[in-house]
Length: 238
Image 1 (cartoon, rainbow, N blue to C red):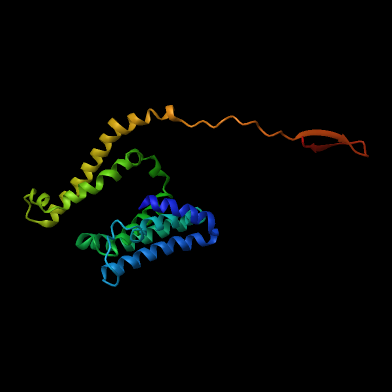
Image 2 (spheres, rainbow, N blue to C red; image 1 turned 60 degrees about the vertical axis):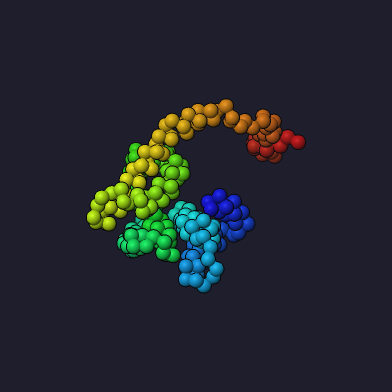
């Protein structure tokens, strides 16, 4: 899904006027939500809403909009918008995700929560110095690769039966925390023993641009004017 978006969005940015880009990004979010709602409401033929690009544009469209809006807005407005968005949306996201994460609105609520968090985080310089966040960013690709199978396993019926806990809330909470911890451990292991080792070979495949002759530089000469004063004159080599 991301790769398809990354192929199309740069072309849109290149061809569309800049004043239209934020509207196009929000339109992608709206189209995705409406299409997912239509599928789950039975208005159009069913399709796999989890793997179809058009039904998973919430986060991508939200990110594209914020990438355009945040740099051109005052930091205090961005921070306030993030706080308001998280305050309003986070309780809804938790409630919907806890009861039925397959609801058509859950992806939109989740994207809005992380969008609000981003608005707050970019205006909190102290966050950039947190070692935990830096390290999480380093191993983030491994987290991306392993989180789906681990969370599918955590949702499986037989996995829930492994925990002899009478309260389903406590059981699901333990599975959620355990899944996050296991994802982090696997991603960290992959980084230290596989990915970082491979990256050491990066210098051997570095692309070096061929040395091209520099264009002739303009020469600054001095010429005399009628007054006898010397004025700078720009002479360009042909």
